[in-house]
Amino acid sequence: MTAILSLDVGGTKMAASVLLSDGTLLSKIRVPSRAAEGPDAMIARLIEMAREAITEAGSRVEDCGISVGGPLDPVAGVVLSPPNLPGWDRIPLARRVAGGLGMERARVRMDNDANACVLAEQRFGAARGRSDAIFLTLSTGLGAGMILGGRLHRGATFNAGEAGHQVLEEGGPRCGCGQRGCLEAFASGSGIAARLRERWDDLPAVLRARAGRRDGVSAGHLLACARDGDAGSLALWDETVRRLARGVANLVYILNPEIVILGTIAWHAGDFLLEPLRRHVNAWCWPSLTHRLEIVATPLGPRLQELSGLAVALEPPSS
Ligand SMILES: [Zn+2]
Image (cartoon, rainbow, N blue to C red; front, side, top):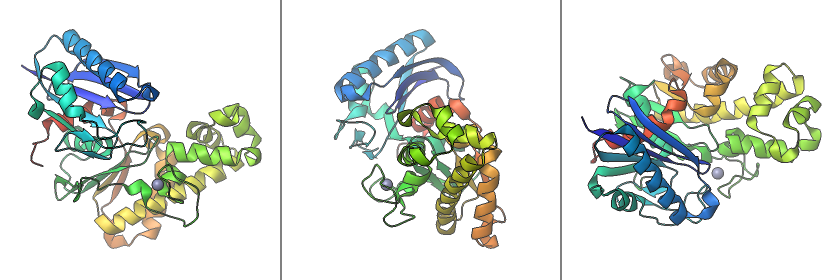
């Protein structure tokens, strides 16, 4: 039985895994990305790590799926210029991985992380059997992968799903993309952290004490303090959830999904995030759109990292 190589290239971590097509994990190696070293050094380490993972798995590997931050061109296999990967500009990642590993170029596929995640959910997770599903990464950034009418929706230039950059408030907080008031600036991990840094002097004492220093404050600190019942932290958490709910409600009005699946932060926060989120979305959207709507955290948890690349490799190339 041949196995499949799954590569995940992110701004903070990279991983190479070898799996069977049913999701069975044979080997996995993870390293820090050291993104500041630029694409050549990162790709060399990625290929070296992939070779090690293949050797450890002891299986023949002919197919590879890569999950990487967009924007990118999945057909040409070219990474354009992701904001979290400095120095990457029109990098033919699929060709370089194929060349480095002696694979056929056509058998190395890639897609952006949000699309890769929704494909993994469709094959292994909460979107199984669903024809209309949205996955929101809700991690450092906030992107959407969308299954519409049973198929991955990529858009005219492969960039559909940049849902984090819908503007919720003109003149609002600065987003990493250069605009102001984007959903991502309010509700992603990096956006929440930036807002907390801005308001550091006015933050609840409990939250400042838990974070230790201004530059280290994160969404995780806010979640922990809110869960402990600190009133000031709860107010900030509630504000964040309301912003996220606005973004989700907009997507529900436009796309009428059966299920909205949320990634990292929701996986950690569980019902502490999901219950108020569902309440807001149900209050703001028409019942005709919400009576069958489910809003859940990913059931795949940390396995999403290896399953997303696998799902990209298993997706028929024409879609
Ligand atoms: Zn933005």
